[in-house]
Length: 102
Image (cartoon, rainbow, N blue to C red; front, side, top):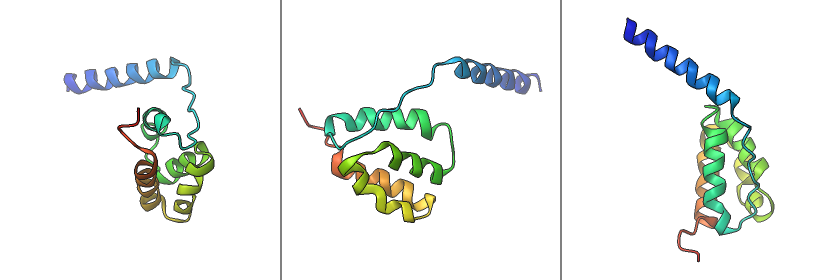
């Protein structure tokens, strides 16, 4: 029981510390392959870790994309969050996630 209480106390302390951090700015993604991985990492850390709601994740992903990137995933907006969010991430990776761009 003491172990459980200590674990809960540690979680509360971590939450308090994370609330003191400055809010992360999420850059928009405009299709530049050089920006794809930094954008996705920032999005995952700032949005994906903060909500389990795939509808909200999808809405924000569409919101933070511009131009060709937004055009690529806006069709996912008519899907359910459960289907649309993973599909949108997959489309972005397939179209813009070039690992070997120099």
